[in-house]
Image (cartoon, rainbow, N blue to C red; front, top):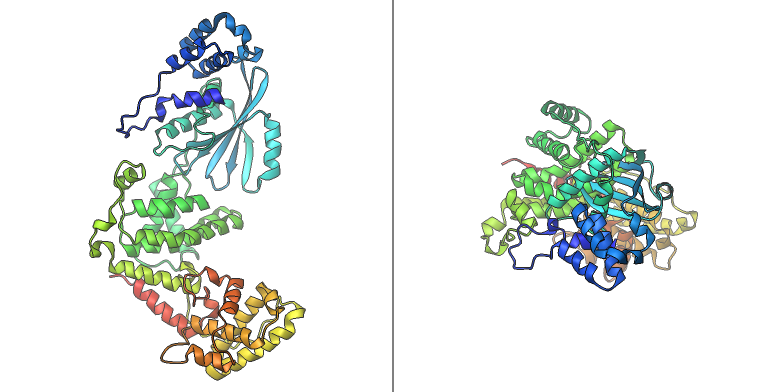
Length: 538
């Protein structure tokens, strides 16, 4: 490992082709080895011997052996056998969503087992992203893999040494050309050692073969999706073009299969690829996540993938959507200039030099409005699917509530119903009943703690009224509502605890409950109108 790390430091492939600084070039390898060999320290001679064996330079290796001369008897016996590398086995670990493959090689160096696990990342361009070394055999590795890895979504299979060599070699070459270059604790420090091993593998292997997606294949996939139940609601003018973008992204980048999606692929798409590569107006760009959600569900269903994988991807879309919308709403470099900026070659865009019109547009305002509306209903997908039918007159749902809180919940329920009958209507009463049930089911301890029923009821009614904007300066005011419960001020602490129980503390607005479940038909109708105004083509 030490010899490999030193060889890597001297490797010219690490030089930055765009670095115009006057930093000194690393010393030539031959000079470094000469300095080690002429040292009186046997450890330095051992290091030179090992580096020369690993370098792949036959002339340099012969020279070091000659210069070490009679002192070679001081080296451990196994060092004299470093040229005897035995290839034991090769295998690969593949993932269902094809983020990358791990190629595993077991060799014996001077009678000692060495296993390398090389991760080849498809999403970053089929490059070596990391390389792990172990002094255990492949059987031990496989046993560990079966113990800790979810075998439902990965597969371990044999691989010919020749194919393993071809794939690792191609991936190393691409990795060396990638800017910025991938780095980890072990990579590229272990690259010389890995290349030394790969040079011993048989030639003539087959590298990675990308799936081929012709223009007709892509059009047929797009047609199937838009004709399916998943794409039934995608009827805006740009939707088909966005589907084409998504197919292009997964077919021409990464592994090359638009039917397979992962959280990592989503992160790259939303946080880099789409904002940087797709040059379009705000209306087009902000529509993409809605199309993406439906497309992912369709292609995963078509392949018959585990629903758990699809849920992970949908969660990733939700997680990155706010940052994605923030990115596309601001001026930014695109195309080749964005690549140069990411590589540190071009100066970042100076937003301070932009005019107000360049920095902020009407589309920016519409995106802000859409984000605020989505925050009220739980996300962009829920916003796109929102309907405006009135809430029904529902009885209270006791499902899932422990018997020990029934008495307390009943007290709170009666006070909530009285308040809604006095100030609001049946829809508000249903919304408050739903919220009471959801809070009690999620955290029954809230109703086992000491406290007045009036305080809990006031918190629930206040939360629903704020979410529906049923409290306003011109209508019912918060103080009047609190007075009805005999309180001087809103029970903010109790409301915060209840919001946390149903996950509403993740919303941007303190008034939002993050779900259409608690919104009246009138409130949802208002949200739909604002949504359609923002979606309406110019």
